[in-house]
Structure formats: C-alpha cells, structure tokens
Amino acid sequence: MKNSEISRIFRDIAGILEIKGENVFRIRAYERAAVNIESLTEDIQNYVDRDTLREIPGIGLDLADKIKEYIATGRITAYEELKKSTPKGCWIS
Image (cartoon, rainbow, N blue to C red; front, side, top):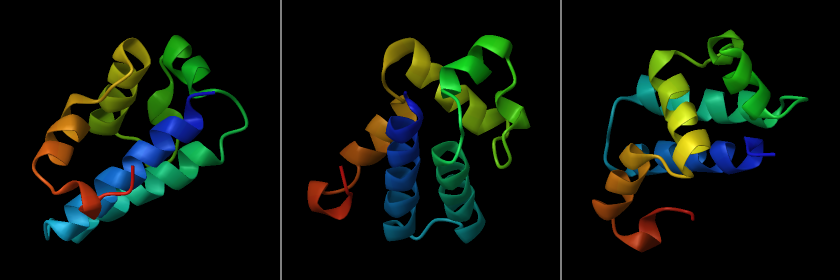
C-alpha cells in the first residue's frame, strides 16, 4: 500500500514548511492529510482509480493532485524541490 509512503511524504513536507516558517494552516493541512491517509482501511490507489480522493477528509484539489502524481510517477515534484531548498538534516526522510 502506498498510504504509508504518501503519509510520510506529507509529514516531511509539513516539517520542511514549518522550518521555513510557512503558513501554519498549510502545515496543518499536510499533517491532517497524513493522519487521514494513514488511517485509511484501503489502499489509496483505489481512491485514485475511482477518482474519489477528495472524499478523504483534508484532501483538497492540491493534495489530490500530489497524490495522483505520486501514484503515477513515484515522486512528488514539489516535495523534491522543497528537499533541495532545505539542508538534509532538517527533514526526516
């Protein structure tokens, strides 16, 4: 299941955003999404296949697009860019 991978990435993004002093609501959105994805009882791939990602609490259009990108490519470009802009010791993964 990709749930744990996506959840970890969203937690990392939240951590990086916090270090960078970004908007607290944006940080909390990533944290909330990570928790909700982690607690799903089915693989997030099923939500992508049914086009129902936005039915998961805390998943809006932006996060749904990031999930779809990860499912399709195995990476999230915005996450990769954030990692590049922050020293490695500052983020978890």
